[in-house]
Length: 260
Image (tube, rainbow, N blue to C red; front, side, top):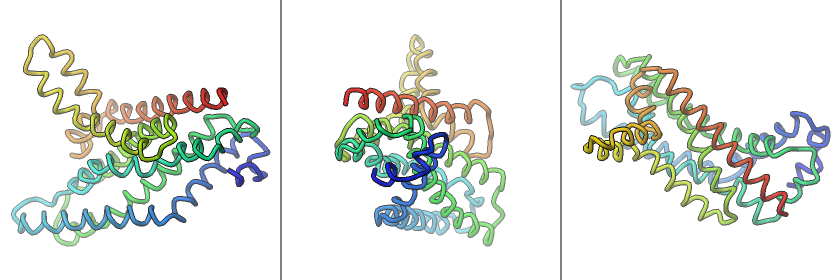
């Protein structure tokens, strides 16, 4: 936090503190070997799956434009908690969160800057995976509309999952606990579709089935955006998920600050 306390950008107030937090966190990501390890592991894993899929298809199936983004969204239950577990938990453990009380910065600036830094890293990761689409362009004729919808949806999907995972980083000082709870929450939201199908078997619980389904992540990505189908309700779902999660995180940080 020393960089924030001495930075003239922070001391001027306004919107500059938000950018100061964003730039600081983004630099920390790319200075950390963990960020490069995550990118390497994800790309290596996707390359193995991609090669296996193409070998199995053997020219008999259409080019899978949405295959890689769909796998990437599934992996967010591991990626997002790793990206967010230290963002707030580390500040609390080291006691640097209390320093914010003396800075011309509100909780919103602080949370938004950290969130956008993590989302920026996710954006870079999503862009790196587009290399697989360029491979498809060289060996087949993939659906560009489907590809755009799948990658754009994966970008929004990642933002929502990162925002949700940040809540647990604000709740606990233990990074491992924050990562575990974040992963569990994302998995629950991912598997909501399965729970909805199970509930649909009971006619009396059809309303609950629809509610659970709409609450889950897959209902707004797998059946629509991953196939190039754009619906305003799907985009709004991810946007409101981000806003809601950041609001909750901000309130948690605000409470912890005043208690300190």
